[in-house]
Length: 262
Image (cartoon, rainbow, N blue to C red; front, side, top):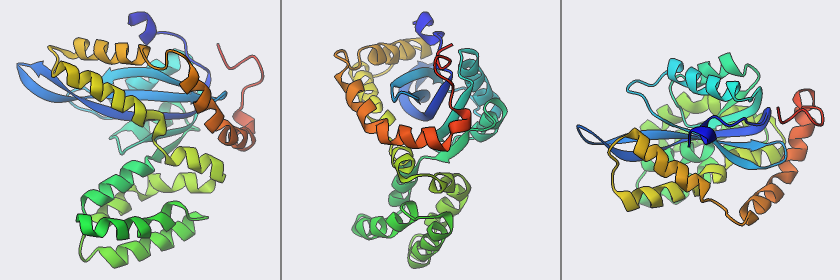
């Protein structure tokens, strides 16, 4: 496991997705503990779990700086998009380690959090009203659609306004890019299927005596993924249109042939 955690990585990733899986760990008493997973998609469209880290007692820029510096020391010089869900201190750490990277709020998580504030009978209507926001042709159009949605629903669900206004600065960046880039940034497919496998493995164990045992379980889950390689082939095929758009949009940061792997 130590060799896997310190293995060299690609020099540039089109996107890195960071998400948390909650695990029950015994530390005096059994309590929920977040374990963060980073999944990278390289410039050939290959998906790879870059690392897994247990959350500290206090998260913040210092913690995330140590995580991202570890990735940089393993060879990652640049990331085009880093997609996360409002993790405290992470944008500041990204700016320090990869200054050109775009930090993007996970759109799917934002939508899910919106629906949590609404009653079930209103969710379909809200789903229709938020769609023009994330499919808008520009940031200005998205803002107009956002305001229309909030004007309609904030009297009934005032927390939705705070949710969207707090997330807005990190929500809008992807709207400036090609529709193919927007499509892959907007989805959490890169990490959702992995989380489902983690949850299955974790559920079978119940809880873990310490962080190391939980990390080992998650590591073994990662190593058992896609034994035939067919899943990776399908994944690469789905990402090809987006990678063409990335190559044009980020041409000045695209590594020359033979320099991607250090």
